[in-house]
Image 1 (cartoon, rainbow, N blue to C red):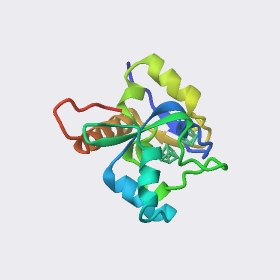
Image 2 (image 1 turned 60 degrees about the horizontal axis):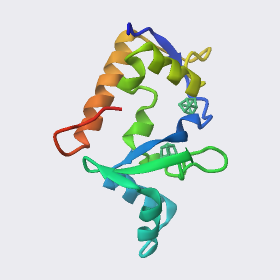
Image 3 (image 1 turned 90 degrees about the vertical axis):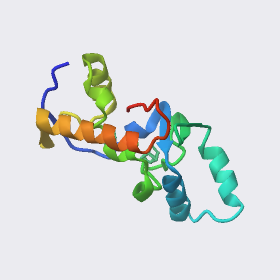
Image 4 (image 1 turned 30 degrees about the horizontal axis):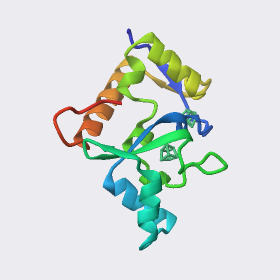
Length: 149
Ligand code: SF4
Ligand code: SF4
């Protein structure tokens, strides 16, 4: 797809943390989350059992079923400073800009896309950001079959 410039400004709606999907944590993200939430000792095992359902390429995966368990009632991330790369780089994931269907999905999910007064991202800026996301995300993975967001 021909990437078009977009306007974007996050409204904090929390939609990108809802629905069914996978959130990819590193060990450092999890340790950071435990520190922020004040989870210590034996409680850590319980927290990790609840948060992580599976593992892939060295990443720990939280399978969301409706909403990420770290999203609070006000739709705020409770571990913001230690959130995964996937969360901090949204919506600049390569997968959202590869074809019209994926871009439409993004526009439906994120009310910050096309927002009046939002920051303008040129085609080049989008390309740079998505390439960086891809490079950084793959650097977090072990193994040969590295995947993209
Ligand atoms: S869906 Fe978009 S506007 Fe809403 S919180 Fe996520 S990035 Fe921000
Ligand atoms: S870790 Fe935080 S930012 Fe990421 S999906 Fe969960 S609530 Fe959202």
